[in-house]
Image (cartoon, rainbow over all chains, first blue to last red; front, side):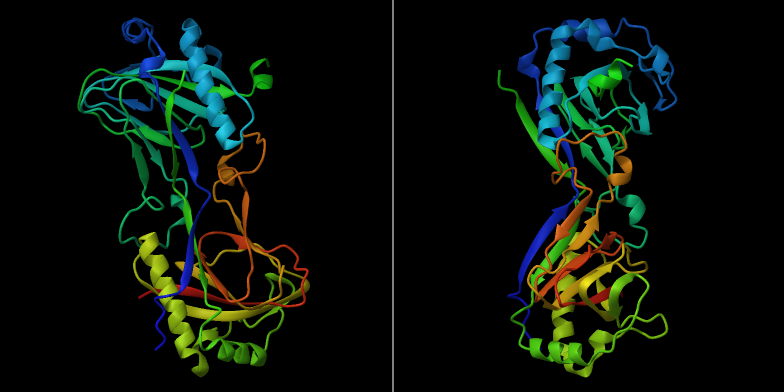
Amino acid sequence: MQNNKGLKKKLTSLFPVNIMKFKLQDSYEHWEMLKQEVKEYESRELDIVEGDAKTSFAEDWRIRSYLLDKYPELESLMLSCVSEFCYYNSVEPLELFDSWFTIMNKGSRVQRHRHEGSVISGTLFLNMPEGSHGLAFSNPTIPYRMYEKINNRNDSYSYAHLEEVENYDLLLYPSWLEHFVPKITCDNRITISFNTDYPRYKKL
Amino acid sequence: MIIQKHTQDIFPTLIMKFDLSQHPHYNRVLEVVEKTKTSYHMIMKDSESSYSEKTGNAWLDHLLLGDFKDALQHCVNEWATSYGVKNCVISNSWMNRVGVGGAVKSHRHELSIVSGAFYPIADKDSTPLKFKSPLSMYRMHEFLVKETLYTEAHHSVQCKQGELILFPSWLEHYTDDNETQTRVTVSFNTKYA
């Protein structure tokens, strides 16, 4: 039998999904004030958030929350990160659209969802006590893989990718990418999330 | 202000290329190619295939090709290890002939884990194998400045004589019209060992 060990080979990763994490701790001065203030804002019920949690997100686009409008300096910082993401991913320039806070306590979780009507979404992690999680992204190729029996989960195959974060990290990801927050075992996980859209649509 | 950032690529689809042009039994492969009868097949345009729904499609089981099939199997094993999938073995195999103006319509290989396309004969600049992005259907709300690794709807892999391309069988693929005289492909599927 021929020895095949010396065969020249090349492995290529096609169609990856790009996500970005920005470390913003030193880029904004009012984190503590922001954390206090979001707790005071009005919150709503949301089906995809389970357990002891509150959020200002509204599914009805007519009553959407625009939390970042109250914090122009922070909004500008978010926008600069979004621009970086757009440049890297060759997506046309975007503007921030709606934005909202979510506060989760022990035993709560956020079900799998995506952000329709948005291009890139972001989540800023204001308070991440021990026992909380970042975001878990669902593998978009899973529906195709009905015939695969897996030996070991790896980057290509895993059902989900859990991106852990620290306080004041910002995660940016394509809005179409489904994601969720696994059940947490701590109180007071605070995030601000936002959507984006093309400037021409925002004026409509 | 400099902001520290980390960029990460998640959920890639793995394909592999192997160079088998120096295989000692390459001439035997060419001998079998020459003797193979091909005919019309519905997923091919102006081209022919040995594939038939009525037969076992056992092109690689030709008596002359034992060592060569072992080499292909070795490549499949490497892919399975990288991909993290249960061991699989080559099952059915067939041969396609594409000339000027010929093409292969878009398709995938159901009931197979990894599929292979080996080019025993391919004129320079033969039409590449094109993979459709499985992510396109999700991207209804993106205006792109240009196509990149992250945004491409199709990815072309050059067709080079002597090379084997391995790809997940679920990944849809096709070719554009070929502009060369000869582009011969030996294709195969796999099943669990």
